[in-house]
Each structure stands twice: as C-alpha cells, then as structure tokens.
Amino acid sequence: MSKRNRRHRQSISPATEGEPNRSWLPRDASGVLLVSADPYLQEEAKRVVAAAGGTLRTAVGVTEAVHVWDSADVVLVGSDVRELPPRRRPPSVLLGRAGEGDGLWRLAAALGADRVAVLPEAAAWLAEYLSMSGAPDPGGTVTGIVGGCGGAGASTAAIWLAQAAGSEGVSTLLIDGDPWGGGLELALTDGSVPGLRWPDFQESRGSIDPAQFRDSLPAAGGFAYLSWPGTREAVKSPDAGAVAAIMDAARRGFELIIVDLGRSGEGVGRLAWDCDKLLLLTTAHLRSAVASARILNELPPVETGLIVRGSNASPVSPSFIAESLGLPLVGVVPEVRGVAAGTELGRLLEMGRRKSVGRFTDEVLELNGAIQ
Image (cartoon, rainbow, N blue to C red; front, side, top):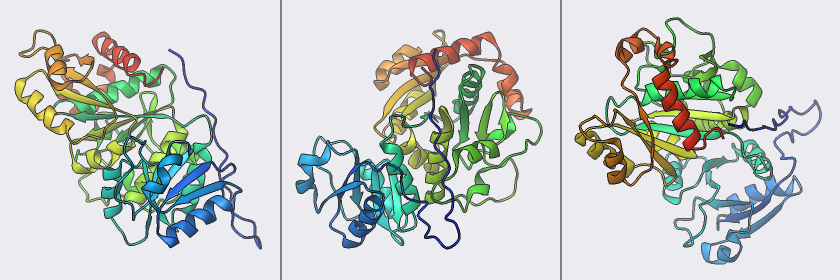
C-alpha cells in the first residue's frame, strides 16, 4: 500500500503597498475552452486567463465547441448554456454572475460540472483552479459515504475508515457532511478538542491556504476532522461559495478526504458532487435494500461501491443485495456489540482497533483504491 507524494503549492501572498494586487493570477494557465455567449462572462474569463499568459478559446455555443471540447485542458461553460454536446466529458467549472443564486448549483448538477465560480468574486479561486489543473497532481481523493437507509451506520464506517487510513500514515480528513446529524465530533471524543468547525468558515471565499486549513482543524485517532458543532445552539451553514473553497483546500491539503454525507439534501445534493468515489452503505435487510435503490438514483454518476452491515448469516446476503443494486460489494461492516453506547460516550475510536473492524477497513481501502 503506497502513499501518494503530494506537491504542496505555495500560498498566495497579498500585493505589496503601491502595487496592483495580482496575487490571484495563476502561475501556469492551462489551455482553456469557454463555452458561452454571455459577453460579461467572456470578458471575465479572458481577463483571468490572458493576464497570466494562458490561452483561452471561446465558443458561443456547444455546436461550435464540439471539435475542440475534448482537447482542452479545462472546459468552462457559462450559465447561459443549458445542454452539452453528446458523448463529451462534463465541464470543469460553471461560470455565473452574482445574483443567480442556488440556480447555478442546480444547473451545475444538471450539466455535471465539477465546480461553480461566481464572477467576479471567484476570480482568485478560478485562477488558482486553472493553475492546479495544469499540474500532474490533482490533489487528494474525495470518497463519500452515504447511508442507504436510516441507521445503517455510515458515520461509524466513515470514522473507522478515517482511523485506519490515518494509522497507515495517510494524511486524512474526515468531513461531517450532515448539519442535522448532531455533530460527528461527539462520537470521536468525550471532550472538546480545539479547532475550527463548519460555522467558522461562513465567510470563506476564494482560495484557502491548504497548510493553514489543515493546521486549523481538530484531530483525533490519527486524522483531522471538520465537524458540525456538537451543541444545541443554532448554527448557520456556510454558503455554496464557502463550501467550494473548503473542499478545494481539503483536496490540496490532504491525501484522502472521507465525507460522511448523511442522507440530507445538503450532503447528498451538494457535497456528493465533489466526490471522486462513493460508498453506499446499507444493512442486510430487504427494506434497507429497497431504500438504498431509491437513494442510489439521487447520487452523482461517479464510481460507486456497496458496503453492507451484517454477515452471510443475515436475513439477506450482502452479495445478493450488491447484485440487486448492480454495485460491486466493497466490504462488509461487522456487527460490533456496544456501538450505540460507544457512539454516545465518544468511544468509537476504541472500537475501531478491533480485529474485525480492521479486516473491514483493510478490505475497503484497498479495493476502492482510495489510498493505493
């Protein structure tokens, strides 16, 4: 099991006094294709790419873009685009204007775009993204875990997988993707650990320094984590721009990012689109399998594997569920006594050291390629 060698980028420094602030310019711009008939988006994209000495090709519609689509390093589409050419890779970034709101994210989901950039506010982030897209190292792998049914144990599995990866020396971040889950941190420790939580990133925009991001997070069990607060107070969720900045910093700062997506619309509907791989977790029961089939239809079209909690002695065999759903069976979560009590007492990491759990995590982390 080999670890990835990561090339950390230098942080972007502000302009000195009296000089124009060009810190948002990428060091090496990629060959970029913009598909948009919107003059404003064309000018903004041209400003970002051309100022750095990059090359930008603009097509006003998908018909004009077809013959150069797959040869571009990065494909940008404007919010005026409503359909893509057939049999072409999804666009890298959807560009939009301030004021278009959540409609941009719905359009991005429909088009399969990896990211959304609202201009001009996201010019710095877009420049950094273009710079990274030309590098051979795309950043860490993001693996999302979603429960196919209520109470399947997705959070428990996510914690154990993060713990196992961290114990192998892999730089790992566990993200709590469910603001309604009560705070993943409560299952990790029985005390308060210093570090930032989701609400602390409400005002984040553009490019977050990955080293500073990594150092700002709490850690336990050999991995860092970003959790919703385990308190009763109402909290405000970061908006789409802040979430994009956080996920970008996570990729640049860690080798493996495991996202506990929960089953809410916020986790599945937004963070799942940032994942390179997905793991659908269900229990070995008929109703759970049916519920999992429904949520499978809501997931993005990325590589997806199945995890089943149970054993071959369960009411429905894990292999049968996998065959029914048309997914590869990646691993089987063992039934460990006392998990519910351990969750309440913040002792799941202790249980993660058991041999049966170790067999499960070894199987999953090797077979889905997350840390190979």
